[in-house]
Every structure is written in structure tokens, then in C-alpha cells.
Amino acid sequence: MFSATDISTFLASEHTATLKRAESRNEIRKPFFADPAIDLLRELGLEHERRYLRTLAANKLSIAKITSDGPWSAAIQQTIAALRKGTDVVYQGAFLDGEWGGRPDFLTRVDRASELGD
Image (cartoon, rainbow, N blue to C red):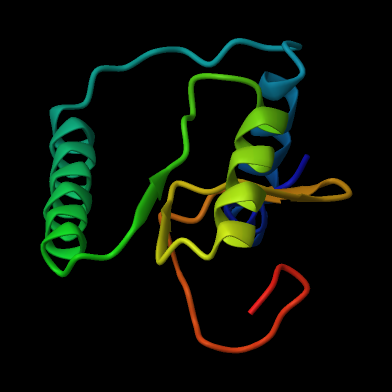
């Protein structure tokens, strides 16, 4: 499966993309280097998401939080069910289209007809 991040990585460096693909196939193992700056950026990003979720909840929007600790197929089914239900916001949804997949942080409902319902 490929994602938008895979495209960005490939455009930045074909070699890095090749290494990441080999790692995903368990052909190589990426060495671990602790990097406090990356840890800080990750935590700041997660805190930003948590604040945004609190804002959405304070505005009385219905929110479906899709789990990421189970199989990808389960996350996809949860996402589709939440969209069909008309949930206002889907957090950490999952999609798959052939070999392409993605996990958007937030999906916000819009008022118009779609294959998933109005």
C-alpha cells in the first residue's frame, strides 16, 4: 500500500523511498537514533490535534474517533460507517483504494449528496 507520504518521500529522495519500502517488507531494519527534536515536534502535533478535538466537541459536533491499534480493514470499516451515519467529524479515518491508502487527521462533514448519503 502507498500513501501521500510515500509520494513526498519519493519526490524528495528516491533512495530514501527505496529504503523505506525495503523496511516495510522486512528486508532491512532501520537503525534507531533518539532525536529529542523529533519527539518534541511529534508531541506538539498531537497536542494541537487534542486541542482541536476539544474545540470541535465544545461546538457540539458529533465526533467518531477511529482506532489505529487494530487492522487497517477495521479502521476502514469504522470510517465508512461513521461517514454513512452522517457524523460531523471523523478523527483519524482510514481509506484504501487499490494500493493507495491514507489516514487523514480530520474529515469534516459537508452538506451535499454523496455515495455515502446526504
